[in-house]
Length: 529
Image (tube, rainbow, N blue to C red):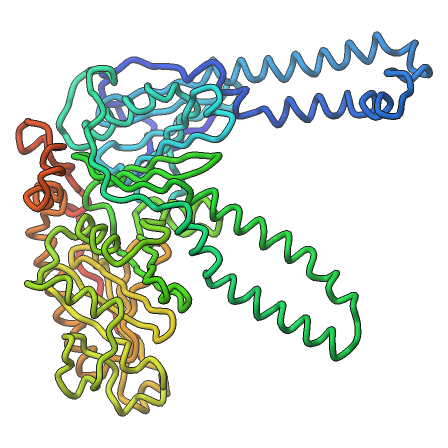
């Protein structure tokens, strides 16, 4: 028997918290939806030979096995009964409870396990529907806490309406808006307002003009040239596995990005996407730690961008699911990017945010950091232009009252935005060549994810000054942190959004972020060499 808890564990001898909610079971079809592969394997093992004989026009059963048919059928029935019995026991011993500020999930009948997570530490909530679950009208509820995604609590599977209501309950209790033994049915799902959607045509175009397309074309050109020069036609056969893998990658990206929709509601930013397997994410306010906007070279033709985020609990995952979950926008126009930025950072901290963000997305300064750049970004000094001949006028940073903007990349444009209160620690890096040219890199540490905030090749004076100033900004921002009230700040700018806010006390319109109340002292390290 094992006990697992996230982020805290139950200790022997420690009294359990009071129970204020009933234990419930998942849908009876859940083990069959999860374990259909096992049933298919049993059927394939016992039916493969008979199926092949039938296709060949022979007897359905081998005559040599006629005397052992009863035993074979008995053995197959026993295996089937054991499998189904295991499914039934798995369902019977899987229970969940929302109680005393925790959500708990008990599983296992031989090796029992209890997982629990504190509601006030919930970072994001997802509703996942694989294809088979969609057929049965079921959904998996998955929510993360701030431990890099290793201890995500899953409830698989619940009826879709029940999953939505339970998600509303968890979000409401995490916000402190509800306490006591209320059930999920008493808390309706919060209203929402759709802010953008990605057309399938744009998604297909973005895939055809993506980075991997450039690699494919370059690789194909090399193979053709080598094949012509060596007169060896067999080289094209080596492309078959690559073509299959590339096709699978394109299909997976299309499947994950299809029907992408972003909406806002009182409980957070809602993202929906998927063709066969659908997923609905809810990011509570203030949980996004860092944001990155990128633009591949070919996307510049149509003015397309993509957005990734770091969210505590999602962590770094090389799988397609992990990449999809950290995608805030698979492909969008500049207006879409600015709209999503306004949700993540309602107060940009500047008087003309569109000009500043546009300079971060596409700007290239005409002078270095030794003069005053026209767009406000402090870039690499002219003396270090040999370290980045193409990008020294592009690499730079700009600090607003609420966030630090970092831009880089001459061909692959990149803009990183880190709210000041999300800066966990910082470090200065300076290698031998950087020391020779009098520059240094400043690295900001946030939660694990696809975004790695780094100021490239800033002048040593500017880097040290930014180091000290950013530490002070982070401390002050954590004292007055109000990102949980993000919707109240966005609503005055949009009557449609204001209509989604229910009439309730102010303390019920925000999701508390207790991680800020327990933030450890600022960690500041300087690494030289």
